[in-house]
Image (tube, rainbow, N blue to C red):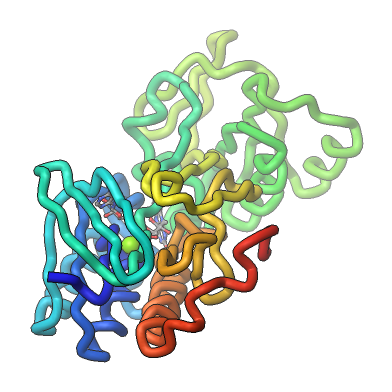
Length: 307
Ligand code: FAD
Ligand code: MG
């Protein structure tokens, strides 16, 4: 069967796009490997009507609602290759099955590059976070440590003073100019220069000089990159952002390849469930329009950056 649309990535953004297309009675194949970016967190915050819900429950509830539409096919699988062109894309999964579709949507999310600090990865999404709006409130105005990774960490430290008493753990990642130090001091940020040996307990940071600092929570600015090479495989242009690397997509979510669309974290920033869902919903509408009016398929912005 040649589906109208193949959606790779059945999380928030991919499902939001699929929902619009299903409601237009289009045939949609969603292929999902079940590795949402927030799978490390027990609760999701800031998504209207779902504040504080387990992120897996939000996704499962959405999937149940999608499955009420008869033109949906859902496959739990990992897509390994994407080939073809508009009206004839072929997607092959790890179990060797191939499917065809007229349009391809990449809603495949991003991967966080975590700093290599002993004890950090197991606490990711539990007591180590990246987004103050998602996880800052729950820290109850306690002590917050910012693990520096790049100049973005300075901004993160200043911002987080609205959520608690902030210490910037420089950890050898930054060379702070006097002006920057003054700015941080004005916001009440304490600067800690000693490097981090490891993290243990709730969010206890042991420094190389043996001192131990306890925090209600830790924040780290991660770099992100697309979770796989599917976009490059089909020829989509990528672009650098302050967050890392994403698929280049225009205001209608068209990539540089006609018929291939991208939405959610992999194609826009900043990153959140609300923004992924909003972007996904609009992308579904744009894909539907491209099926009705194929002459609109080529992005006028395909060459030369659109943001
Ligand atoms: P994702 O949710 O990452 O989903 C991508 C999907 O594509 C996954 O299911 C994956 O398995 C699938 N996929 C990828 N490649 C393939 C392939 N080759 N084949 C098949 N399937 C594939 N945001 C909030 O608003 N509130 C929060 O509280 C919050 N907490 C967070 C906590 C943590 C620790 C992290 C890291 C992020 C958090 N976020 C939060 C951000 C949120 O997770 C993302 O913005 C959101 O998940 C983006 O949705 P998405 O659909 O674009 O991608
Ligand atoms: Mg998705």
